[in-house]
Length: 253
Length: 371
Ligand code: SF4
Image (cartoon, rainbow over all chains, first blue to last red; front, side, top):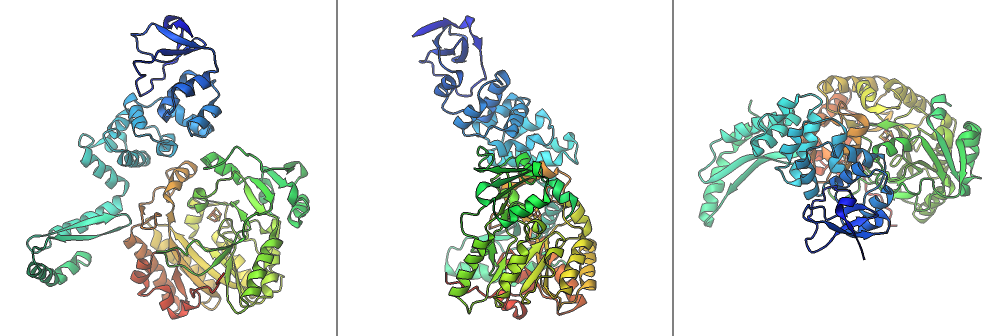
């Protein structure tokens, strides 16, 4: 086994998300340091094999942002081979995503890595330049919600200023609803009207009712707990008596 | 032949096995020979799986003629649990389309970077004949517009002529050619048994201009339908996908006006209505290919029970009811139905599901295939 002083290597630090295990030595391939970048180390194992083989041996999985950073440092690698290994398809689309990703804030890149975002999840980035704050705010969400907000935000950038899009962004829940309403103004306003009517309906005591959207449908969700069959009958009858008022929720005039 | 159709294709690849086919002979007569290349295997073998937006757009300009290896004859994709749909069979004569609608479902479906035309239509006809001979008493409706437009490339293939002649021998069957083109002259002289329906997808002209690129304009579609009618072909109109926009009522009212002023209810076998819907995964490609100004990429759509993105059910009902009432205000005899809709929408808009509506019963009768 050959060793080399790290100071003599070119560092290909593409900032892999997972720290290199402490018990493993740093790895250099033909004077290119590819693993174990922390400053406490002075020596690296020197490999005399193909760069791509060494890389895939060291890293069984790399996410899109990690690959994007590597691409920025070493665009001349055999990217078709690497993409095949990491289950991506090397084409102009992916190259474009790499370039765009490296322009995003590191916080967003790390979130995209942690959530293992794919090409489609990140494809909205191709459509418009969004503010770094917007991307940073997204990192507070789960993958599912964050991807939705990313899409809506970018779709909104066509008609709204970035200040408007970022309004209420300090409050995670409120911002999500705000972005939803901006992106779906007709639906949001209709749902709000229904919500108001549901709220102003005198529901029987211990019966909860709310206007709820489930995909392409929305309606009243009525919930109550019956502690006995008599209680069930009482609440059901009270609900039946409400019929004409419920009718008004859909036909207020 | 329109020069635009010839210039539209950058390259034509011909699989060696198809080199002697009639369609290839026509291609040699139509296209400059320097665009044509005979190949031993499918071009671009590395381009597999989901296509990028650029690859998809380019696939519309690369023609590939080859034999179809699988079954030609397939059941309509609408015949799925949870969806009310016509009993309908599809005959795939190709894959991909030379027109370019923003909402096209092929964007979620195509995984080959070429526009493919199958050269072995004779085998398709043999398949059809086998079914016909096995179940002579059954009635079938067969359409060719699932994975490609039925007529937009028909000047090149002339497949309509073969199909119409074939269906002449099976008068109990119905052939439906569905298109957004105006290419009909190539088959108008073919004798038929009155069992061919020429169907047009219709949208107001403002929607055609904005969302249905490279298709025939509204008056060209209406004129083509008129030509077919004059040769006693049956007609159908599909107001599908209806696309919501602020002036949608005016636009669609005008469209109904145009159709009903040129045709009578007796001329059209039926009218189907459907609203914008698409697979969620195709939204990325639509955004990249048509931008954020398209009415389709801007649409307020939500995932329905069947997984597709659709307008809110209230909006859909309003649209369907509006169209139905517009037609019925012209004449009670217009037959308007919904296609690819959930049964709930059927019952909300039409007070009954397809098989309960007497005038549509036949259309939606279960196909007796038993095969
Ligand atoms: S005409 Fe039909 S197949 Fe062709 S692009 Fe439009 S929707 Fe797609």
